[in-house]
Image 1: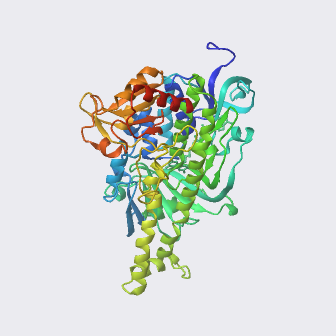
Image 2: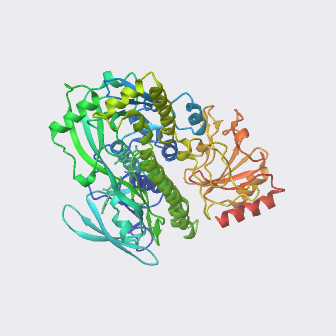
Image 3: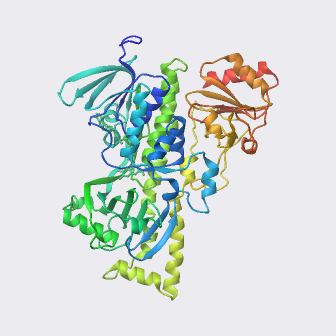
Length: 580
Ligand code: FDA
C-alpha cells in the first residue's frame, strides 16, 4: 500500500476476458492502479469470439493496439464471401457478401470509421490486451479465484483464494469490476438480477486441424454454412465450418437438443460429421478440442450496485450470432474505465458512475435481442432448403429449389428475400455503430429535436454530432501530411473541445479554464487540416460552433453557433463541464 491510505489498488477486476482485460488496459493507460485476478493459469484456451467489429477496433485504436491486433488477425477482405452450400466440396446453393465486404456496402463501412473489421480469435486477442495492460502498469494475478466481497462507504473488501496453495486473503479496493463472464459470481454477490432465459438451445463446437485450402482460399470467408440432413440440427438447422487460421485450423459446429444430454463426442462420430460437412470422406483430421455452448437470452437491467460494476457476458448473455459478445464487452469496458478514472482522480463526483448502467444496459438489452433474432432468421432460409414431409428433407427441398417450374421460381424468390434478411446479422453496421448514450453524462442539444433515422438504423450507420452519438469519422491531414481521423484527435483519456478555425472564443475559453483533462482541437488548423472538407460536410454545426467530446469519443455537448465572446464561451463551457 504505497499510494494513499488503506487501498491495495484503486480498481480490482475479476476476469481477464475481453471485458476484464480491456478495462485493465484502459485504466492502466489512464494511470489508475488496477489489479486483475483470473482463476485460471492463463487467458482463453479456445478461439471463441473472433469477429471484431468497427466500434471495437476503434476502441483498440484509441488504446494504441489496433496495429498489433491486425498483425495477428485474418484480414477484413478475407472475412466475407459467406457460403450456403451442401458441403465445402459440394454444390453451392447461395452466397452472401458479409461484414461489409460486398460491393454494395463496403463504401458505407469505409466512410463510417477509420477502422476496418478484423477477425482475431479470442485466444489471440486476450494475450495482446493483457500484455499491453501489464506493460502500462496493470497487475495480473492468475490462478487466483474471487470468492466474495463486502462493500462499505469507502471501498470494497474482496476475498480471494490462491488456487495453488488454497490460501485465502483479502484485498481492499475502491471499486470492484465483475468481468467474470456468463456465470458471474460477482454479479450474484452484488445482488444484480438477470431477466430472460438461459440455455434455451445448444451447439456442439469442435476445434480441428485439416488443410482445407483447396476448398476455401478461392472464396475466402470466416463462415461456411452447410445445408445437410445428416450433420446439422437444432434451431439454426445448418452445420457450420468456421475458419480460425486460414485455411488449416477450423471449428465445426452443429446444434443439438440439450434436453437429450451431451452430444456424442467420440472421435469416430466427430470425424464422421466433419467429413460430411467438408464433403470429403477421406479427409485427414486432427481434433484439438470438443466443447458445447448454450444459447442464452438474458440481460441485466442494472449493471452496478454501489462500488461494484459488472460488464460483458456477466450482464448480457446471448449466442455468437451477429458477433456482438466480445465486441460489446470491449465497449462496456471503454465506457466504464474513463468514468472510474475520473472519479478516482477526483475530476468527477461519484454520480458519473451511475451513467454506466444508464448508457450500457439499453445496449446490452438490444444486442441480446439482436443476436437471438439472428438465429431465428435462419428459418426462412431453411424453408427454401427443405421439404419437411420428404424422407430426406434437404435432398427433396434442394431439388425443388432447382426446379424450372413455378415451385422452383417461388422458392428462389423466397431465397433471395431470406438472404436479404441475413443482412441484419452479417451487414448490420447500424447495430454496431449507431449506439446513442442517454444519461446525465450527455447534455441534450435543445435545438435539435428528436432524431429520426434516414435509413434502416440496424443496417446503416447514421453519423451525427448530436450529443450521445460518437464523433463522426472524417479524414483530416495531420502534421506529417498523413491522413488521420477525427477519432484520432480526440479520446485517449481526455475530454476534447472541438471547434473550427473561426471558433476562437471557444479556444480561449478552454485555455482560460485550464483543466488537466481538457484538450482543444481546432479542426482546419495545421495538424488537423480539413483538407478533404469532409468534416465540413459532417459537423452539422457552424465552423465557429463547438463540441465537447468525452474520452470514449461520445459527444457530450454541442453548441451549434459561435459564442458572442470569450467570456460567454467560458461560462457556457464551464457550466457544461460542471453538469457532466
Ligand atoms: P469471459 O467469459 O470471456 O471471461 C471471464 C473471465 O473471468 C475469465 O478470465 C475467467 O477465468 C474469469 N473468472 C470467472 N469466474 C472467476 C472467479 N470466480 N475468480 C476469478 N476469475 C474468474 N463475441 C464476439 O464479439 N464476436 C464473435 O465472433 C464471437 N464468437 C463467439 C463464438 C463462441 C463459440 C462463443 C462461445 C462466444 C463467442 N463470442 C463472440 C462471445 C464472446 O466469447 C463473449 O462475449 C466474451 O468472451 C465475454 O467476455 P467476458 O470478458 O465478459 O467474459
